Image 1: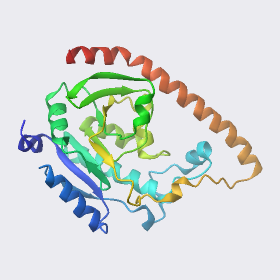
Image 2: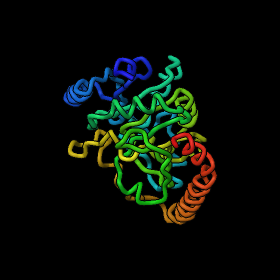
Image 3: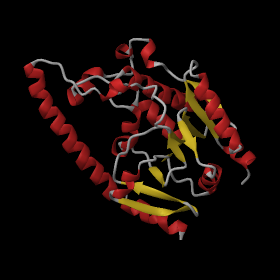
Length: 270
């Protein structure tokens, strides 16, 4: 499959705030260098309005389980990714490669895309997550994508939404699950037991986050302070324990339930 054929089957959309012209130029240069046509999606700047009043945000539930609100940058990021999913549904776009504007791209990304497009397509999302620790835990190798990349199913729920392939079906599900949300978008991607989506990762990732540039989300998302009454703090401990317990059990149950699915997919690669 040629790069022109890739462009016929997939749209590449980069999330970028209009004021971030340097990042936009850098992403244009990186994509042009590997021959991939692309477009930009105007990101929601969470620092430009009162995000806590966004109708898509469930602050009460967030505080109940985490003791603090999502940061303005996290909500803006959520709304930006949701916006692309909405665009896919509204325009009936079958497949999109979503990229954030602080990513590096391996030269063989077109080869990975070509193989995935030529494959069985029995997936809803392919996440490109550049965290080696993800594969140090339980995971299943489905089969080779190219000589240098493998399709995998993982137990972990890794963070990062800086690069992923998204089908229209998955976009519809994401829109529905973010009508009222309390999690960062990457956390939602990891909760396959909630969304019911078939999500896989590549090992390694052809899309790499650029950690040398400041994140547009902001560092306030790392603030763990919890200012509340003694009663609220007391109740929070139980809600937090319940969240960790149910999330851990659900993650392991989902990984066990999808074993037969992964075995069937692996057989197609052999």
